[in-house]
Image (cartoon, rainbow over all chains, first blue to last red; front, side):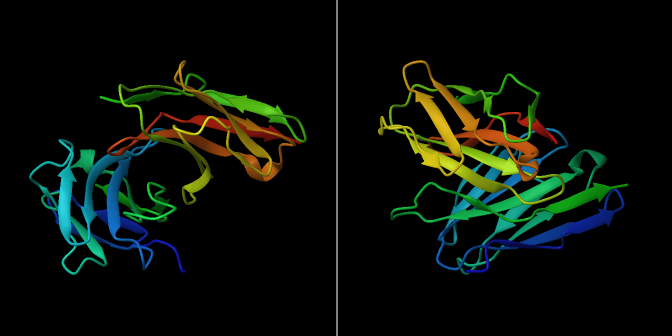
Length: 116
Length: 111
């Protein structure tokens, strides 16, 4: 068990550019979540998948944001036409959908996005 | 909508002493989970302890324990024998259909 991994760990981009982040969940976990965390605040829910199905999206997820989990394993989060307000830490977490440890989410190290 | 409130933006504790971090939440659901996560500076969010709402017994993990008061919707974290490595931001989180976090409490440990 290598834990949740995210790539890249840091991303600096210019306003208007597109960026894509990747998350690899814990291998047996079928639920995958994306959160956004701004400095000094708690994470805010963006979206989650069960296997390859995207089951819920927050209103925070504007139409510039899109997330995929095509084979039910890793996931990508893309932000198009980035804005300075998108600067934040993007966290990925995973969990089991059933079993003894259901509802406990394990977090990755995050991708810190800076939009100049 | 569920909300989680952490009323202490910062707390300090002397090494080896005990500290309690407060958390209250608001929900109309009867079945849910509560969590405390720890986030050291520039490091990964780590699960500290979890509590199922249907369990009356308070969860304990080594030096960490909770005081879960369901009727009062209160879920405090007690850290005993505080260590320098406990210094971090602590988040209380509620899970009904999704995970909702409080704003966090910064814990400083003095040597």
